[in-house]
Length: 443
Image 1 (cartoon, helix red, strand yellow):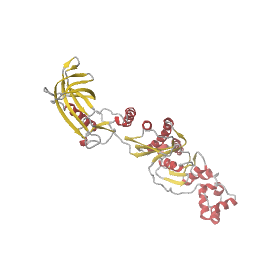
Image 2 (cartoon, one colour):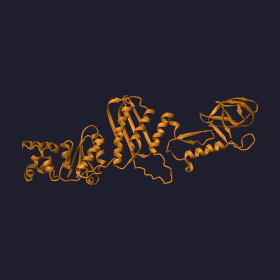
Image 3 (tube, helix red, strand yellow):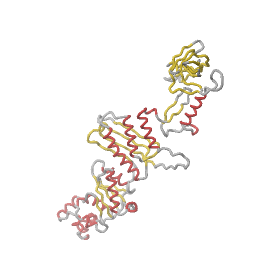
Image 4 (cartoon, helix red, strand yellow):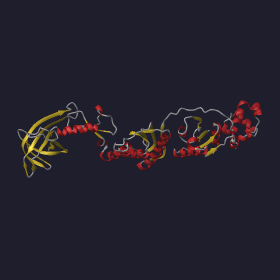
């Protein structure tokens, strides 16, 4: 059983080939406007031949491919029916000559001399050529005439000349009018995403990267790449992620052409343990992070990783699913460990008494400080005010002096006098080029 798809329009051949490869690995480019594939075995998936034809027609409608579809017992009969009839055609086995009889001989593409001879004989349709005796055709028209007679009767038998599947998943839309707003653009993106995810699902594949290229009215190109933490086929999540990305990085001119491509990968299968708490789905978590980034900023959401430097509170934000840190520890674990060490580094540094734990203020509190010969003598900050009755320090740290962003700070641990305006607590204060700050208090 063979199925032929015949269509026209821009990029018809590429769309027909992509649709055919979704159903069979054996696909032939039969003509400039027609492709044929081996449909043997599809009855086990869909049922009767008419069910197979309905499945192909349904997938063509989902992919926005306008094509005539024909199913026959040999490829040439399917090609003639698809090119000669519109819609879906089913050619019963043994009735090929009757079914194809009304078609014009032009569909068989005979040589101009042979076509002129047949027209002089008054033979212009398949049934008229098929009714001629084979011996007389062989004597007068030779091998080409016999071949045309077999095609007209639907009796030709041959193997397909298969193409290699390029496994390229991409689609594009040429717009009649420029698009300026995000809402109509999202409608077009949804159309492309549904087609790509359907093509990937038909081959049991997923994608971990989507590429979007927009050609603008001023001739410029706007390109965006959406990388996913795990392979997925969630078209709705993809669309929302693209909308959030385009809201953050909008094109600078109206859009006249849209191209989208997907990177095909194998789906990731994972089984959670019975005693492990359920984690959020990676794609939904990525969508949540994208919404947070749209509010707080791109570089302010992710996983915090401490940098290998003595600079206080130096860190960077990693994307979810970024590269693992050294010794197999996650950036979050390392950050927590460093924060715990930072919180406890003041133990024993205060002026006498048992060890203390430093609780940091986020952000540090700006302060007005009176300085004496030995250091700070009076401190005033938000909800903190008092005379310094004891202190330890200074501890001077500096670094990155070889870069454009050097840093320098002096730290003190100070004990403020108790009273109505202060609780007599122990604080960490520091001085840097920007001024004085209260970094935290000791418990």
